[in-house]
Length: 64
View (cartoon, rainbow, N blue to C red):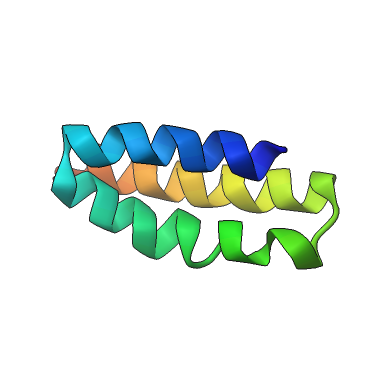
């Protein structure tokens, strides 16, 4: 269920900022969402949280 929410938000972001979506795709989607079937909900939330914070850190440093 959480994966569906992430994918829905990702679709909206894809329309808003292509460069940011590429970063998210590399970090959150490929390394996170695709692992959802192998992780329990808590492990998936932790993985996505960590990757999200990494993406935010990169954008805060002026990457985008």
